Length: 256
Length: 167
Image 1 (cartoon, chains in turn green, brown):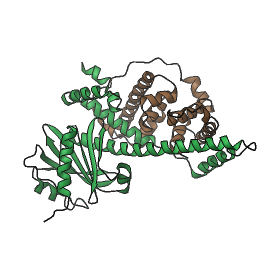
Image 2 (cartoon, chains in turn cyan, purple):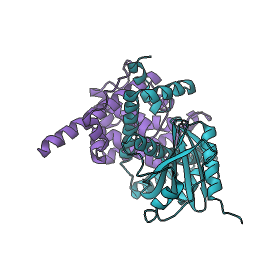
Image 3 (cartoon, chains in turn yellow, brown):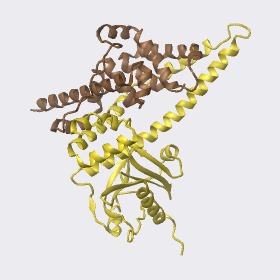
Image 4 (cartoon, rainbow over the protein chains, first blue to last red):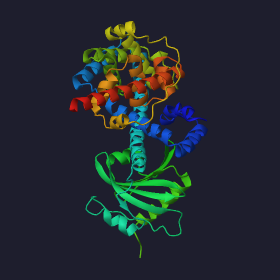
């Protein structure tokens, strides 16, 4: 397929509207085509800035109260038994709407977090300096964060594993500083993000391990020792889980 | 009231007027309450209530004004637009301020603006957006692609203008 044909599908790729098969084909193409990868990155950024800018208008509390009152007036009974269907209707509306809202808002926030991570991952890898501390030695990378982050973390020993550490950099999510570590496995780059746990993360992502797919990236996230970990990349889910397992073991309290 | 903030935001973007947006949101909730019998359980509630809001907009003052100038319902599907490659302007566009992006969205024709808001701000799927505005999925894709192209062009022009202003 020629580059133009791929580019007509980039919007669908960014909107996660391609079939699984087409998603895979697109990813394979993007890995080898710099011009399409640049367009995909640009489209992702535009979608992100549109979303941020689009949340612009907020209703004031006076108007909210007015609508609530209006709805309750309309729910009052017209006849002796006429209130039964109205109330049932209102309850059904509120029930369905509340359920939809809760599910959608949680999904939306979780999607937003994952989108921001996808942005950080792609943007940093595309930059000329993806890491600020370049080292495969965890004893060099970890101390580099001293004084830069209000927390510390342990990194796993990688000998005998297919992974290698490329380095790290300081990053931000929701204005909070965190560590962005980049690992390599069979020519794939995997990002590991570590932030201080926030109530919002916990509520959105749940405290257990979350496995997800975002723009066809594989992702795993969990909370441990007051820190929130995100492992993110285009490597297979097995590699993502294996690296997550190594990080979890490194972070777990040592027993003598 | 669930979806209240999102519905208000969408209404305000459509009308570009606070009072009209309030009228439309109020009308939407009343119609939803009265017409809940027409909602089929198991179908998409969000698309249903957004469709009510959009229909209320189309019969409002600003909606009627817009429908006289923009063909809202009769539009053939056009091929998806292929974006130009990375340019220095497009790199600057990534740094466009929120104000500039908001101005560019506001200046889009309403049929492009609504699809962009539904898909990118409300994160609806193409199917949901198609149900909301009662058009085929192909039309949603075509309008979305053209809306994004127009947005990129507007932002690039703003950046160009700012560069000339600096000289």
